[in-house]
Length: 417
Image 1 (cartoon, one colour):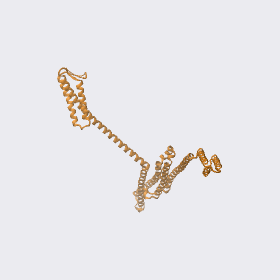
Image 2 (tube, helix red, strand yellow):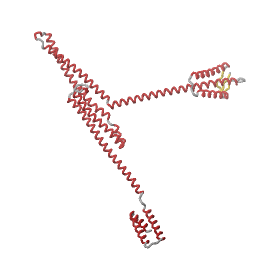
Image 3 (cartoon, one colour):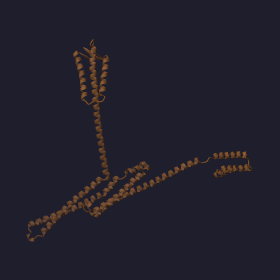
Image 4 (cartoon, one colour):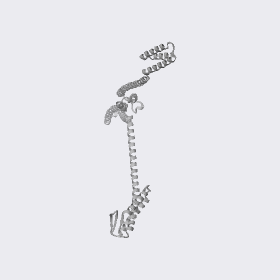
């Protein structure tokens, strides 16, 4: 029995020396497979250092705490098992590091691909939504709807024309049968004439119904064409500008006014477009894609669309006028605030620059003392009276805060020298 223990803990008990040999072979096989896998795999930075460090740590731990068997040969068995275990652990650690790093890199690359695909899909969806939104605002679906209606009317008109040609052919054949010689009339001819008459009547009835349906279809297509500019404007109305007025206040006046003015210009252009559509379809111009429409129908559909557009132009025009007036009020208020600010600054500067009466009194006192000293040093006749009069005038000027009298006082004092 061979006991294998580590740091005093029994790991396994081998029943024979053959079991020990098989253990060494297993550990060597693990090390060999690990080294072979590392050679076949792409080189990974740090794998050798990890494997070497793990093997060194395992070998040190084995040399310190590993104990295999007993007796004189225990040291040799311990060294053999320790070395084999260290090699197996080092190779396994290097393989784990290499393939773990490769797996992490593969997962990261897959995650990056998924993120890139999600970003591309998001960009594609955003572009699609932006394109659909732009097409919706520009009214491309309305143009397609109008074109489809015109194509349907054209097909209906062609069918009615074919029906009219068939009726004309029946009428011509019926007239030819009636103009034939009466002597040759037979019962078969009478039956044919009755059949032609009945066919002509049916063709006339169908033609009349087709013409009524065609007139209704033309009127519907005309209403659709005349209402297309109005429907497009309803989509393009400046919602953001009006919402900004409610949330941002006076700061949004100018942008909102510009947006609404542009929208009013679009309304006027739409009115001109409706008038042009009505005139073109009433006159049967080539650009109408079908024949002429009844002038009354054209005028009625156009009048309805123009009335709606006029109401829209009036409403947004009044709003634009009020915005311009509010903008002028805001500009005036800002100008008044600037004037008040400038006046306040000037008033503060003027208050700071005001002459202090105490300083003026000190100045007069100093001048008087200086002049008294000069007079005492070189007295002159009448100098005392002139100085007293000058001081009296200076006191009166200080009481009145009269700057002109003060200047006269200083001049008088200087004349006393």
